Each structure stands twice: as structure tokens, then as C-alpha cells.
Length: 443
Image (cartoon, rainbow, N blue to C red):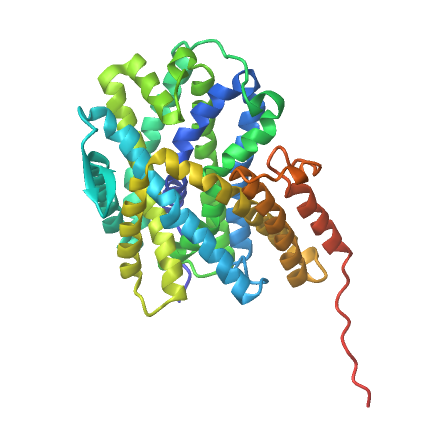
């Protein structure tokens, strides 16, 4: 089959689609609060956040393209499968996908409801009735859109995302034009280590983990568009990644600035969603609330569709006896169930898991770019990822509240990044390895 060339419109649509996949729940709720808490240290905190929430996802997408979609090929089959399953479950039905529905409810629906206290008892659990009904509808729509992945580029990239981008641009312009409060003093970890705290806050977006999934999904979409040559796939994926990264950086910078200049609008806020709601209520009233609700709903919906689609594609390849469409139905149902745990509880549970898994994902991206420079690439991949997992687990246990004070002597441990230096050392060690000698049979 002859390879087709994508038009500029198709490339932009692919880039917008990639941007829409990333721009979801955490991307909107974390930057405003981080900007507010960082105060005068906002530039450093924002730089750290942009590194893990924009830079690393961009690099990860390029790494997936470089590896032709097989970024875990040098790991043992069992280890690669376990790691992939863990990432897909975290990004999919366990945390990220349900969070999209919760944020869409909290910001996109709840402000319009007069009474949100009604509850219903189901299977011995007391559930918020309005949240239950909303999340059921939200993930029903997600399921319908994800059932037709061949239409993703046209339906999501070309129709929904340009509208979403225009709304976000309007919000960003208002942040610049309308006067805000004076930037306050930094608090908590932002006072002493704003850069590292910003890096760790970037974990919460889960975008680097998502890149490992979205890269494969984008390559699959390119194949369906008739792009079969690996070199062409890599070129178009990189172009889409750059478009998505530019869009994400634009959104994050404006939201950080919004939080830093929110003043009394941010006092007492538990998350960035409340800051956003207070901001648009003050400056735009009902029209602003409608605008914000539209932005959040579109962002969360497009991200949910991407997550459910990518997870279903992977598990369909892993278990081909179960169809892609059945996996879409299963994961959409699970997301609806998990979403009713509640937003704050879900975020709290996810933090220790992200502190454990994120270092492994970053290490995987790093060694992928260095594969050709290693004399023993398979051993280098396995050693580096093992070190990242071991020390990432220490960070995760600490974040979970386990007493790990015996490890306080380790560099960057108190900041939550004990994995970084040991992982870099392991990579340097891998450069010293020589090729395994080939046994010569005596005659």
C-alpha cells in the first residue's frame, strides 16, 4: 500500500487532538493552586511544573516514536507487561479517567445545581445522587465516542478542540487584562524548594505516563490514515507533540499567573478548581461560570475519550479474545464507579502511587534515547528501571505516610526525589559496561 501524505489541516487536527487528550482534569485544577501557594517563587515553581507536565510528555512522545511504539521492547516480557498494565490502569480506570468525570462535575455542573446534598444508598455505600447521575452520563458519552476510534481525529481534533482552545484563550487574556491582587509570599515547600515542589506537582497531571499510551494510539491513528512508513509516522507524531506542548504551556502559564494574583479569591480553596470558579464568578458572573463549565467539560471529556480508547486498545492486544468495544464498555463502567469515591479522596490516594511509578516512566524515557550508546542496551534498561523503581518506592511509601525517617540521609529524599541521583548514577554505570564476549568453540 502506498503511503499517503497528511495535509496541513490533518497535521493541525492531529496536534489539536493530542493537546485535547492531555488537557484534562489535573491540568486545570493543579496550576492555579500551585501558583497561589508559590507566591513570589512562582517562576521557579512554574518552571519545575512545566518540566514534568510539558517537557517530559513531549520528550516521551518522541521516545515512543523513536522506539516505533515498542518502548519497552528491551525489558523481559513479564516485566514489560506488568509495567504497561500498571501504567494503563493508573492512567485509565484507577485514577486519571475517573478524575476527569469528577472535575467536570465539580466545576462544570455543580455550580448550576441548587441542591447537591441528596444521597442514595447503594451496596451499603452512601453516594451523592447528583454526582452519581452526572458521572454516569459523562462516562456514557465517553463510551460512545471511544467506540469509534477511527473518527477520533475528525470528531475530537477538528471539531471539539478548536472550540476548547478559543475558550481557554479568552480566559487567559482576561487573566492578563483584568487587574489582580499582589503576589503573596510562598508557603509550605514552595518557600524552601519551589523548583522541586513544582516538579512533583507536575506528577499529578500524569501526562508523562499518558504519553506512553498516547504515542501508541497516535501511531495507530496514523496507520488508519494510510501513514505506514515508520519515518513518516515519527515526523507526524513529533509535529503533533510540539503543537500539544505549545498549547499546554500556554494554558499552564496563564493558570499559574491566575493563581498567583488571585489574592482573597484563593483563600480557603482546597483545589485550583475553586480558585477558577471564584475568579470567573467575580469578573464575569453567570456568563463566566458558563464559560468555565464549557471549558472544563470539553477538556475532561476529550481526555476521558483518549484514556479509555488507549486502555481498550492495549488490553485488546493483550487479550484478543475480548473485543476492543467490550473493553471500552468495561472501562467506562469502572470509571463511573470509581468516580463516586470523591475528588479529594481520589487525589490523595493517587499521590503515593505516582511517586512510585513516575520515576520508572522518566527513567524509561531517558534510556530509550540512550539505547544506541549502550554497549549492552537490554541490561542497561533493566538495571536503570530497577533502580528507579526501588528508590521511587521509598518516595511513594513516604508520601503514603509510612515512617521512613531512616532514609533521611539520602540526597533529595526529604524533597520526595530520592530516585533521581541513584538513577543517574546507574545510567553512568551502564556506559562503562562492555559488550558481552562471544564464546568461541574450540575445534
